[in-house]
Length: 257
Length: 101
Image (cartoon, rainbow over all chains, first blue to last red; front, top):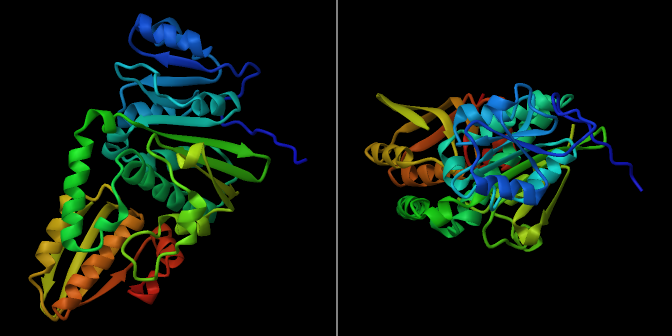
């Protein structure tokens, strides 16, 4: 059996990998109870000059807060709304426990921020030894996975609309309408990055949509001039390996450094 | 994504900046509307300012190409950055578009 080791991003080296959630504002009783139930330490930054090991920054989803959370000493960022960490996937905490980096944002925030840019920069900075070629392939794949998670996963918009100018206009209308629905816009997109042995980096992208059958989708290859439907086959070309989990709600992409 | 359109007589120069991706908003719609006014031209998409493109963005370029072809115009993609060029390569976009680096 292959040995799985975990090379941790800077600032995330810790003997005790119990994740901590660091928040700026005094946490509500509800958030405290949620964290307690999950076995996560909750820290308020004014009481904690040095973040504990395996800290995840929590707060409003802004470019600055995401950038801060994705850099040492933090191991990730979680957007916190009134619902606290309800809805955050356990995979995020497990990733941090395993020495990786996590990001959990609501759909509207993924759309509003330059999420791809922020995550790609963080991966390059936190996980060493990635060749330029691999970094390019990782960005290409991540872009496709994020697009799928938002459009098809969380917003449930079908593919076929974007084939003509008129279809694109219709697509935009549906996208805006669904983004205005708090239940859909509040669904989470989560990105979890971990090393697998010395040679591989795994990037998982999860959504909270209906899921899909990856093999069935991959079996239908888009033609060269198709205006949609090439995202997954593009990811397959760009990754070392690709598989789906959680009923197709998580895409796990492995890259050779 | 931001864009600028410059009419250069026989050709039309379109500069794209930022990310051409799933979040491409009414800007691309507005670009398509502007381009629909040009007939029988050679339209050059300057891509050096484009930091990322995804398959949704590429799909928009296919739509633009098809719309322009109806008016007798052709399209070429010039100066894509390495990562953008890599994406175009992987999707075999060169079979459809003239791509110049």
